[in-house]
Length: 261
Image (cartoon, rainbow, N blue to C red; front, side, top):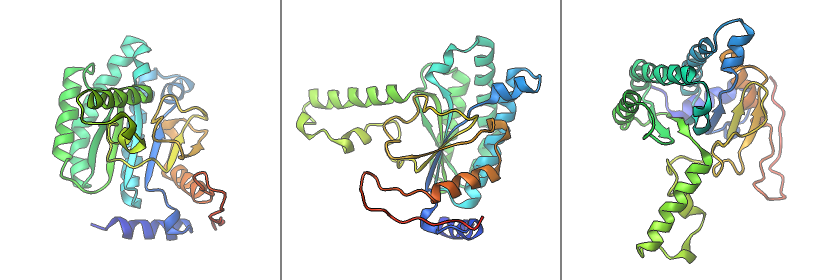
């Protein structure tokens, strides 16, 4: 199995960009499943089924090209407001996909992480999610994080509560609270901040996703609905990202380049 370095070098050469400009962590807001289905005269659930197939393709592609971290916004805490029939279908779909996808995660040495709250997910989904996390915990390839029943605001609130409890217990001085303290109390503190955030369906909002982590993340909007998103679309996003001048608040330009593609 090729190393991250080998995969990234091959990807950089293929896309004609410097290897150091490849993103390490890509986050995606997968939007437009329902609209994709309606546009084709299909029930909305058909769009979610097709979107699941896109998840399989894109996650495998990220493994192949040397992306270390992939985080997908699958179901937000606000999505519980959708019609019960659609929500029930989604919960069943996630449960089946986790069971079916687990062998592929093991084959590709991928570690699964969960962002969000488990407690109000269906019991069978909790079981499959927990099992997949446990079985892939020893893998050291790409980290595949699924934001399921996730809210960026809730994540920050939960981190604040943990810090407050630490102060109450005398384990932390309030004057010592800093960014690192907050980072260490997020749902998955080991995850680096995303370099690139992609949103499909031509939507231009963050929708309560990784609010703390995306302070300096580069945004890329794709007009396609998520079921139509392809590996070539991901390549375009990566090339666009590589051409950005990332200064992180500094005034010194890091330099730009133009891809041959």
